[in-house]
Image (cartoon, rainbow, N blue to C red; front, top):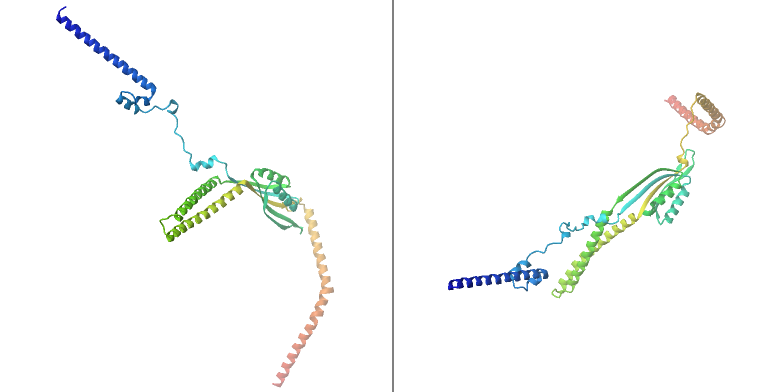
Length: 332
C-alpha cells in the first residue's frame, strides 16, 4: 500500500466517524425533546434548548374536544326575571244571582268568606218596591278570598242561588310591575347604605372644621330621608300587590226572586175584551152615581152653609154702595 492509498483510507475513516457522531447527537436530541413533551411545558424551561423551549411555551394549549363546538355561556337578563318566577295575577269575579231570601244569602256569603279565610270588603242593601206595593231587599256584596279558594267560593255561592244571571271573570298579570318594584327597592336600599357610610366619613373626617362637618352631615342626612321616603312608598306598593295577588275579589249582586218573576200574558179573545168593557162601564156609572149622591147629600149642604153667609154679606155691601151712589146722583 502506497502513501496515496493510506491518505484516502484515513480521510474516509474520519468522514465516517464524523457522520456517526452527528447521528448519535441528533438521536439524543430527538429523545430529549420527546421526554420534554411528556413532562409538559414547565419541564422544557430547564432543558438545554432555550430557543425551542420558549417557542414551545408560547404555543396555545388546544381546547378539549367537548368544548370546541360548545355554545358560549348565556348571561341572565334582568328583564326576563318575570318569566322565571311565580306569576303575580290579580283575579276578579262578578256574579249576578237570583235568591229566595236576600238577607239570608248575605249572611251565608259572609260566613263563607270567613270559613275560607277571607273577609268582606263592602256591603250595600236597599229596598225595591214591587207592583203590588210590597218592598223587598236587594243588595250587593264584595268579598276577598284566598286565590286558591276562588273556585270553591264561586261554586258555593252559585249552589245557593235560585238562578245565575251572569258570571264574569278577569285577571291582570302584574308580574313585571312587581319585579320592577323589587329592583327599585333593592337599589334604594343599597343607596341608603352607601349614604350612611358617606355620612359616617363626613362626621369623622378630621380635616373638616365643625361648620363644614355639620353641613356635610346635614346634606347627606337630607338625602337619606328622601330615599327612605321612596323606600316606604315602594314597600307599600309591594305590600298592596302581595295582598291583591294572594286573594281574589268577588262582587255579588243579589236580586230577589219576587222581582225576577216573568210576566205572564194570557190568551186574548173578543169575549174577554167585551166583558172587560162592560165591567169598566158599570164601574164608571157606579162611581158617577156615588159622586152625585155624595155631592147632593154632603158637598152641596157644606157649600151652602159655608158660602151662603159670605154671599149674603157681599150682596149687602154691593147694595149699600149702589144706594149711596144713587143718593149722590140725586143730590147732584
